[in-house]
Structure formats: structure tokens, C-alpha cells
Image 1 (cartoon, helix red, strand yellow):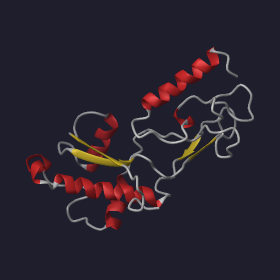
Image 2: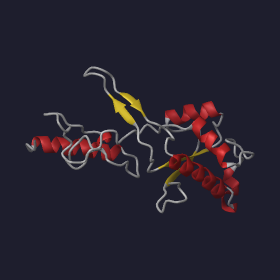
Image 3: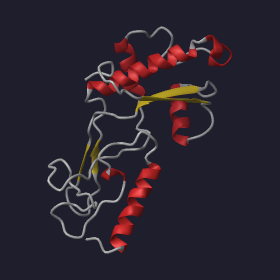
Image 4: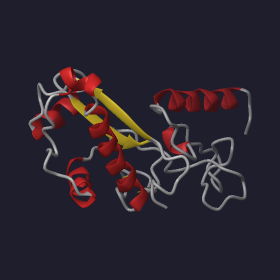
Length: 192
């Protein structure tokens, strides 16, 4: 499915000054040469690619494979988001504030060129989630039951953002905290 075929495609556009705020955005803007320019980012709210996380043994660090852009929907929605940002900033009402496009640049027009730019400069936004989703007890693709218990393992629960079956359409921080609080509440109340 492409973004144009979806009835509910959502891409979040964000804009603001490029020389204040999140340290990771500052590093990326410095690398792209965009400091002092303002920025705008777009990212899919409901990415279709599904990553994986693996453990070799109990003391091993998890190996995470996010699998960026393995589903064509994700690059399509981001390309459309970039085109929408251009359309919005070209409006007369923004003429005083928009300035010149620095990256990928006004000479980059084709979807393939825009997609190449996105692949080269994309960022995780540091919200990987949904890698160990909860679901119905008989759901084969859900390692956790509705009480956050790991199926087939006694005494082990997962209480973080990886338990979400689908990414929320907002920053997942508060949802992740709620999952932890709900899990703690279930344990305190004696729910096995």
C-alpha cells in the first residue's frame, strides 16, 4: 500500500528554529549545515516497517534491527510529507518567515531524489517501540499476553514501549510510563 492509497495516511510535520532545543537535532542540523536556518521535519506517525530485537543469552545486550524503509509505504509518506512542507512554506502568508530551502534544495524535484535525501538524512527520533507486542493469548505474533506476561515464561513481564501493539500517534513517553504504572499496579494487586 502506498500513502496515496491509504485513507488514513498520517505524517507529522514539525518546524522551528534549528539552533535551539534537542541536542540530537542540533547535531543533525550541524552535520547538514542548517544551523541558524530553521528546520522542518516530517515523519510517519504509523510506520509500516516492523523491526526486530534479539537476545543471544541472558546477559547479552539486545540486538535491534529497525529495518528502515523496508516497507515502501514509509518512504512514500515521508516523501509526500516533504512535498507538503514545501507547499505550505510557499504560501504567501509565510513569505516573511520561510526563507530559502537549504536541503535537499530547490533543484531536487523527483520523488526518487527526495526519497534518496530522506534515506541519507533520516533519524530515529529515538522512539523505537512495539518490538514485543502484547495481544490475545492465542495471537501468534504477540509474545506478551494482555497482562504483559511473556508467554511460556513464568514470572517475567515486559513493561515498556516495546509492549505496545501499535505506535501511538503522539510522543510515546507518557504511554510508556502508563504501561509501567499499570504493570506495577497489576503486580501489587496480585494479578498473576
